[in-house]
Image 1 (cartoon, rainbow, N blue to C red):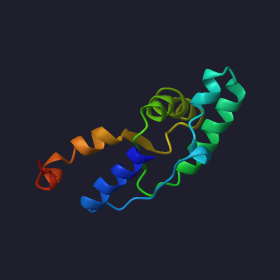
Image 2: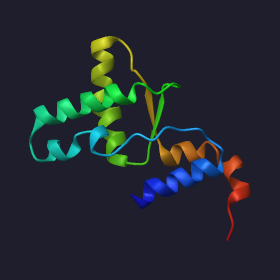
Image 3: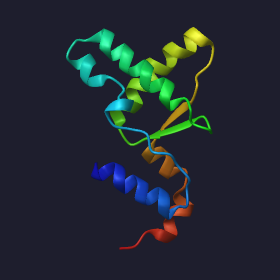
Image 4: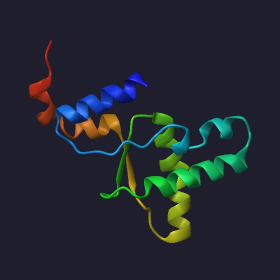
Length: 110
């Protein structure tokens, strides 16, 4: 959990308002997919997608690269084909930070 906690520390320093969602209840289902349980993968991904879709800004930031790939390459495109739109956009944490380098720079120390 240390990576997620460090990500939250950075968001706090930048003064960004956020809501934490994660853990097993928001899993993308990749572990089940790796074990061959496609049905459970679909249920978990769908359940997590519904929970994450409550993001007020329509943006979800993830520090987990596996979740990013699973959502952006599988779950969200499937939902878009079924419903005509995506309930949110997902952004990897490092890209999110990259868009805020100027804001982050004064806080960097060696």
